[in-house]
Length: 83
Image (cartoon, rainbow, N blue to C red; front, side, top):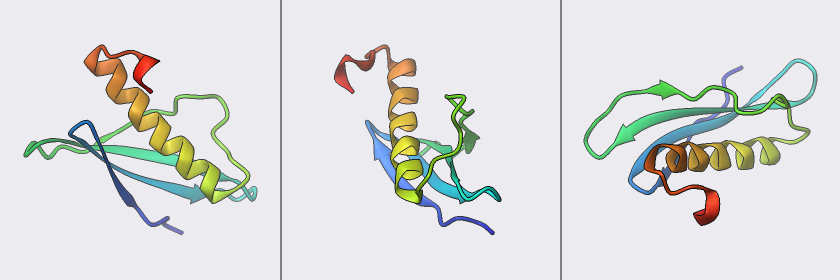
């Protein structure tokens, strides 16, 4: 079953994210960077924690957005003080 992808824009970067149901009754956050500006290039973000399963879809979606924001901060030198 494919989870519905949602679009998230943060500091000019576009992301598609979803919560994929796993067979164990938990959800896995999935984040794909769609690029910045007119540059359209899909890049799957790697898992950023050992805990890849969340009890609810909402928790997994929230983690996916936070993961995208951390990814931007890591590449722009802003650090997580702005997070």
